[in-house]
Amino acid sequence: MKIEDVGVETKDGWSQLVAKVVWEDSDRPSRKIFYRTAAEGADYLSCGDPHPFVVGSLVPAVVHAEARLAVEGRICPELANGLNDAMHWLSCWSGFKIKPLKVEAEVREKAQSCNKEQRSGSFISGGVDSMFSLRMNQLHVPPSHPHSIKDGIFVRGFDIGYNEDDAQDEIYKRAFAALSDVIADTNVNMIPLQTNIRHLDSGIPIWVYQFHGAALASAAHALCARLSRVSIASTYDINNLKPWGSHPLLDTNYSSHECRILHDGVRFSRFDKVRVLADWDVGIRNLRVCTQRPAGSLNCGRCEKCVRTLLELAALNMLDKATCFDESDLTSEDVDRIVLDSDYQAACYEELVEPLEKCGRGDLAGTVRKLLARWRRKKWLRKGWKYQVLRSLRDVIYGHKGRSG
Image 1 (cartoon, rainbow, N blue to C red):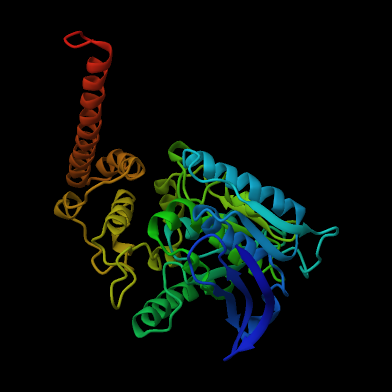
Image 2: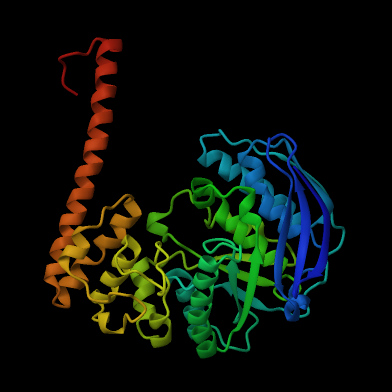
C-alpha cells in the first residue's frame, strides 16, 4: 500500500486533509481519503501531515496482507515504533494469521511544532463510554490544567455514514443536536469531523475487532494543529478485557510526539459509568446508545444496548429521567426478549441483579437471572458439544474408550 499526494484543500465550504491510498498486493481500488471540517475550522487541520493516513491505513493494509506501507513524507519515530508494536499485538491476537508489514517511511529528525498550545480533546459520540470520559474529566481535572478537555470531536463516517443522503443526514442532525446540549452544559468546543477512512474496509468484524481504535486515532491526528492530547473512551473494563479494535495495548501505540492518544476509563465497569452519569441530568437526557438508528429519535428502547442501559438506570431509580428513549418504561417481558451473545454482556447484566433487588425491582432482577441462566446453558451446550467431539477423537487415537477422565 502506498500513501501519496498528501495535502490540504478547500472544497464546497469544507477544508479537508486529503491523500491518495493505493493498494499494491490486494485487488482493491485506489481511494482518495479525506478528513474534513467546516471552513471555519481549517486551522484545526494538520497541514499536509501523513500521520492520519498512516494510522488510518495500517490495519486494513495488514489485514489484507499488503507487504508494505510506503509513505510519502516523514513520520515521527515514536509513531513508527508504536505502529510495529500494534501490528504485533494484532498478529498475536489473530493466532499469527496476520503478518506485520514493513512501514517504509523516513523518520523526522526534529519534532514538528504544529500545536499552538497544549490542548486536550476527547471523542464524543453520545454513548455511555464517551459521555463518562467527558464527565470524569470535568469532575476531576481543573479547567486550567492542560489535560482538561476543551474540545469534543464528533465524527461522521463511522457509525453514521458520511454520504449526505436524507436518512444519514437525519440521524446526524439529531445526534449533533443532542450533543450540542451537552457541549453547552460543559463549555467544551465541538469539532464536527467527516472522514471516509472506514471505507478502506467497511466490514463489521474487522471494524469491531481490529480497526476502529486506529480510525479514531487517525481522526485525532488530523486535528493535531489544534489538539496535542486526545482520549478514546474504553469499552471494556479491566476484568473483561479481550482483543478488540480499541484496546489499551493498541490505542496508545498510535501516538506521536505531536498527538498523544489515550485509552480512558478502563478500570470502570459499564454500571460504574452509568452511576457517575446519574448525577448529570443533561448527560442522561442526551444519551445515544441504540444500535438500531430509529427514525425520529435517539434510541429505540428495545434493542439489547437500550434495554441494558434502561436496566442500569432502573437499578439507580432513574427511569423517570430516561427521556432520550422512545419507551422509557421497562418490563420483565422487555428484558426476557434479549438474547446475550458475549461474556461481556453477561458480566454487565450480572452486576445489575443485586442493585435491582435493593431498589425494589425484584421483577427485573428475576428476569435478568433467567437471562443469565440461558446464557450459561448456551455456553455449556457449545462447550459440551466440543468436549464430546474431542473426547471421541481421544478415544480413537489413544484407545481410552470406556475409561473415565
